[in-house]
Image 1 (cartoon, rainbow, N blue to C red):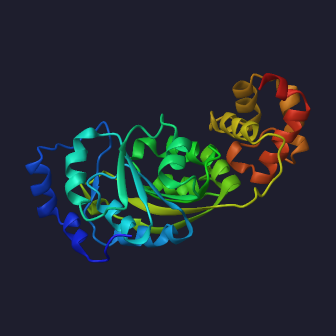
Image 2: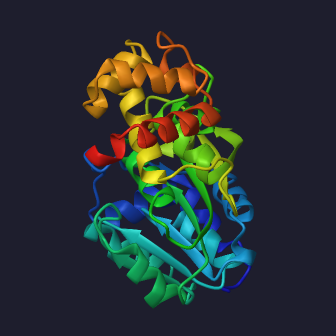
Image 3: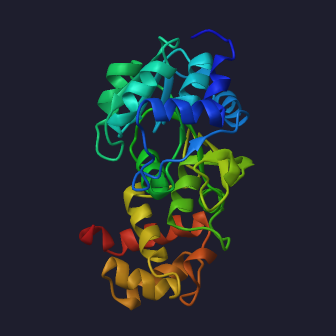
Length: 298
């Protein structure tokens, strides 16, 4: 671990951050959803909550100027941060100069081989993921990580407040979506604290929240194929204004008769909407569809 001084507090100072960015000629990219944290209390709390002490190391996504990376380096044996924007590397070299256990790797987290990265840089895991995620990639990153089979211990992420509420929402509640089904299947989510829009530079138009997702040692429901379960969930939520029957029939390319029978077998009415189905009902639905022949189209 790096030293435990508080030198990093300057990175959350707007004046120092402007000076740093100006000195390196850096300009924010809206396309990359860049909003850097300037609230000095957020990153230490995230680092403390991520559970680094129980992992081989921490995987960070989108380190920005390194304010969270620095904090993670104080509590983790190794931090590997994946950054897409090569313009930030000179800044990170400066801000992480006193963190020999932090390494920045250039790449697109949605495209790179994370299993190989974890094997090479973090000894094969298990790892904790901790990140201030750009809003526009929150769902694909979270879904991709949860469904990847990677040796993950937990995910601690700062995301848009509404996204955090969806991720935490139990199936069967109004706020849930397809991502909620995957989250509840893989982990136990907990919304830790909210972060106001004024905590960022530049400030986004919405508030944020920090969410911790501890991976489950065993899934809470049994299904013949978990990938099929998530396909069923995505189909059910693909047309939220329609009934589950109509959405599933269209999304899975199946006749309404077999889908209606599967819904009834799962204890759900055909006119129910996707957000009314519990995780247990989604599991039963996927089993019924699988046994009814849907496996042949999968």
